[in-house]
Length: 374
Image 1 (cartoon, helix red, strand yellow):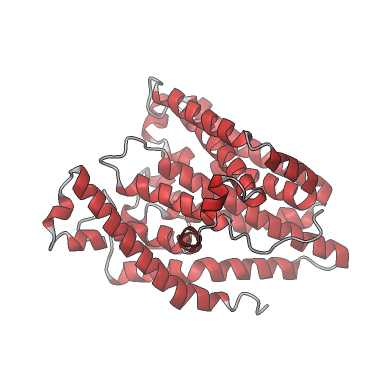
Image 2 (cartoon, rainbow, N blue to C red; image 1 turned 45 degrees about the vertical axis):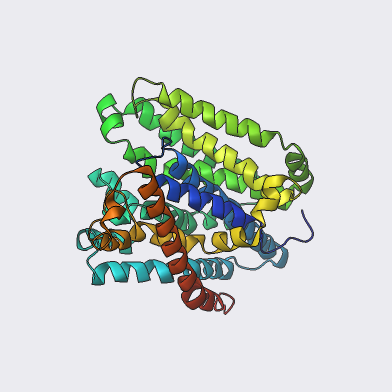
């Protein structure tokens, strides 16, 4: 076990920067972006990163309970309290704004949003949720936070590898079951069932958990992993290969590459990227991840992700987004030519960074001061 571990990985803000900008490119440059996987890769990167950070914290807490022969209840309550302070305030602030201004179809889906179950709404109704589409991934993360800690606290450390392997098997198995058991029509028309299902994302968290286990308990193996930097380009090539196989398949969604393997290999690439970010700053990308402006945008990335659909949504902008409102005064924002689309993208980025910065300094950062109150 590592004797001394930093409580804050500044370089991981650079990973958050990459992840959130992949989402913005995917959601905001739709007419000129030939690649449809950027957003999915960004979300998976967030899942693996969350799996690493949360599991590492839970390992520390569980070790402390075992060392002091204390009940894990206090640690679990503290964990949930701290996560709630970080996530809930601006999430419910956004919902309040949605209710006040009747954004998109808020009144119809308010209960799902408030209960952190929009992914189940998507599964049951087989449709997205207007400007609230992106909240499915936050729901999956929250469902993971509420369920996973119990396993870490109530099983021995010797069983952690088995738990993490089971997470990989459950995630891959969930998607494989959908591929094997669902009809062609269901897979083509109801593919979102597997996409937003929390079980179908559990292998991404498991990959982050494996990285946390190596970092926390098997540091020599972690160092050896980081030293083999060639795993990163190999995993990227493997991910690109899966995307190619999916692209050339006869069916858009009903193919094993898209349903089963794309998320796992996106997670595997994220696994090696995060490992390199933590373990080595000497490489070129490692230095980029610690640039002050990159680190800052990564620091406010939760706000950027949360607010970005309200700033601009390609499919639901009119009357529901800030850019949609501005377009009533600046008609050129609706012109779908590359230069106008890029101008709209830059304008949207500026607006969302301003909103997220205001949110960080006046809401999130002050509230975070209460995280150590219990």
